[in-house]
Length: 221
Length: 76
Image 1 (spheres, one colour):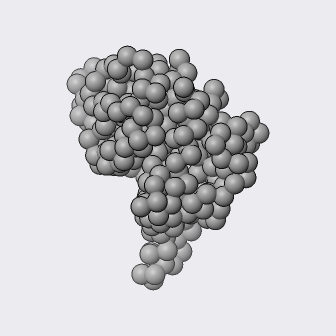
Image 2 (cartoon, chains in turn brown, yellow):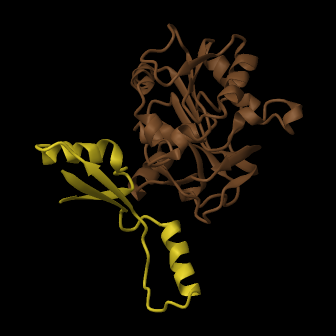
Image 3 (cartoon, helix red, strand yellow):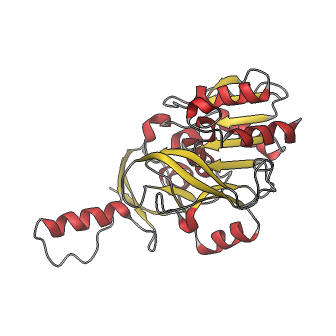
């Protein structure tokens, strides 16, 4: 599996994501600077990492979503290349229009940084195939703007089409319908606030995030 | 040419920041504040002749996230 991780000024989980792609995908993830205009040839998986791209100026993810490399990411996504956006990466994907809705300031205004329980709401996606339907997993969150919002019609559609793939097991940030992660219409783009790449080996305190990457590797093989 | 863009949350979108400011105002003893909404002001210094359509485009493509925000353009 050939993978790439996009690096924006202010990204800080790019190496974590690249480590997960490399360790589980079997070949080194390529780091791609945001100012590039094309992706390496034959990429199967693109990671949009967590962090504070452009210092969260204007809105979280807003500047990164308009950076030069995102044209190539959009083109690749349209061709079916898998895209995984974690945390700030989820914010970038909504700002770029690759996923619906928006991530607003947490409802209690506090930065939340802890392990949370997630429910796998759809185990049929390419990202969740290694999990059981309704399974509870434990993955860390670390964000200030994770309060997912969209209009009621969009929320109904996301739920009706099985595009809500992860839900919080309890209230974490005020997200509409406890949404923690969603996929696009075609199912090849996932945005999620929790960090699966921070839970892939016992030293991390758990391995619940590992199967997301294993499932992806299998699906993209 | 100075132009201001005022970006506000759409009605109905929960504004946690506004709620906190509201709460703080009440804590300072200001009564009679029914609600608070916090927005953003962007001041643009534009070349003469920049037309309205271009400013609208700037708002839709970057300055506002129209999923959750409205914008208003005020030309000086």
